[in-house]
Length: 202
Image (cartoon, rainbow, N blue to C red):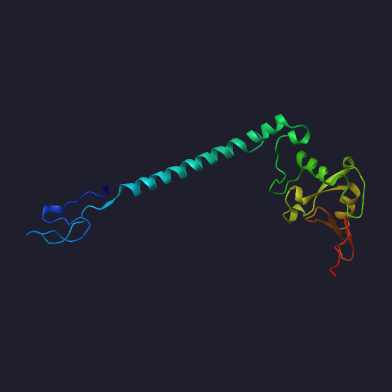
């Protein structure tokens, strides 16, 4: 079956003939100016219903996804509540971001705990066993250079290696992709690694 998509529009003054449906040709008969008035346009009812059905499904899907994200994510979301109620230890704690996104003057307590859990003790590549209680969290890329307050840009260092070696003597430390660290002297002549150098290809 077909549905009328556009009503017939009469010619102003009633002096014109309407066009034959779908042909665009002027109708027969005398009188009037002789120009055609757009006639009715038809389309298939089935195609229209299918398009409307797809649009409705897409709108419902988007609404469901938005509601699901709002329900599940964040510290107060369902996922965090279920984890806190069924697990024990650190896994039962509330979800908190490990990347603050921008540099901050202070290190959030939960981020310090994550750095301690990763580094265990002073992470100076030359070797240092100072316990976390005597260590400070350091931005590997300085805040002044756009360094982020995130787990991947923070390291745990004792007061000597943090305040003296890094900030006064100018050594830089890099966190490698495999979790090891490399320290380089200001003149680039000395390099310390928390791991052995990569093996040379044969």
